[in-house]
Image (cartoon, rainbow, N blue to C red; front, side):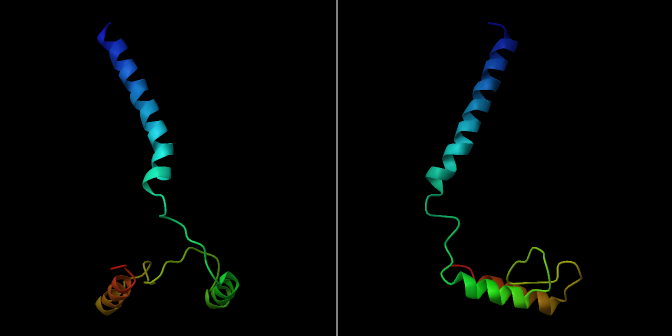
Length: 87
């Protein structure tokens, strides 16, 4: 076989392998990880609707990423973020 044919076969084999692995790995490696069910969804959604200013993507703990947060705001955000990490 010529080098170009071997290279083509290797490329197609690698692409098929990565495609299969990409679909299979989340089912095996991340079993039990990911999304969890919310226990009191109505109460949480109601509180969010009354508290948030409008549509958008929010993350908690919150920090003003559009502006220029002060060192104190950044430190408070880092403390809040570290508090929420599992031990």
